[in-house]
Image (cartoon, rainbow, N blue to C red; front, side, top):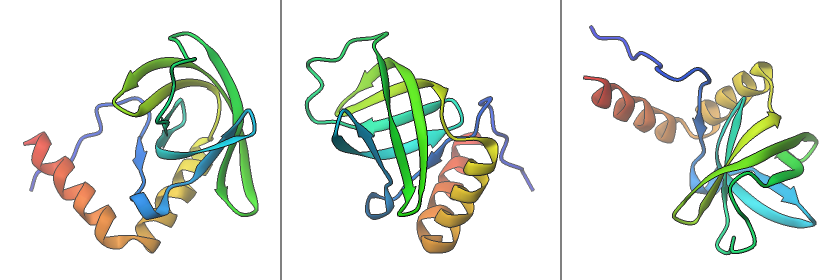
Length: 122
């Protein structure tokens, strides 16, 4: 049986659309589609005022009572998403807890992601 091999240095956790956390930047809330220890993918429909290298700071709300300060530079743009390379953000412990949360609350979504990842690695 082939094992899925993570080729990235930091694990990326994707969220289902209905389970996405939010990040507050400059008193605006944005949905987050993916996080890692060193990166975050933020859904923004209008980012005309942003540019590569711009430093953004905010608060990532992983649950009602759990917020993490984030700080990072705009790395790139992908369709309607902005990818930040984080200097400050979720820890390894936060990532494990979030992975457990997604796996428990959205088991079908997590299983579908796993099967896609295994298929891509073959």
